Amino acid sequence: MKKLGEVCEIKGEYGLSVPSKPFDGVRYIRITDITDDGKLNNDCVSADYNEVTKVPLNDGDLLFARTGATVGKTLIYLKEYGKCLYAGYLIRYRVNREIVLSKYVFHFTHSNKYNLWVKSNLVEGAQPNINAQKYNSLEIPLPSLSEQSRIVSILDTFETSIANLEAQLELRQKQYEYYRNQLLTFE
Image (cartoon, rainbow, N blue to C red):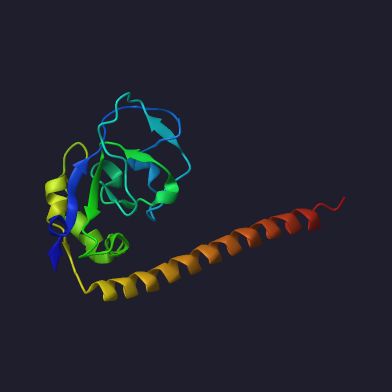
């Protein structure tokens, strides 16, 4: 077991505290942009900020939601998202790739063990929250890199399979609606 803060090069960096503006090519990721399964939604906005002092996200950076109803949600930034900055209710971590795989940590943050940790570490108030110092203390089981890679591969295969099934289900739902409307029109 290792603490998140022990396996990261960037440990708990808070995002920008500025409003959003229409999308200008650099996405501004907010807590509301992260879906329950840790993906980005399609609501692209930019930061209303003239001088960017924060370093944009790097491939594999992890973002943790720190407040409100989304506390505990995570996102792994992928370079295919394009240049992105992130808002202040998110906390960035960059893992030391010689010790741990970003995708392994990401998958861990969708486990029952992680969800129980979030529930037991919430600070109640006007908005529930978990700060960077508390996230730094999150204990993660840390097998060898090869074992982490094996675990990630298995879980990624399941994710791909689920995405394919969801796409097929959506197509079947549209077919059903089409035929239902055709068969029950009686014109």
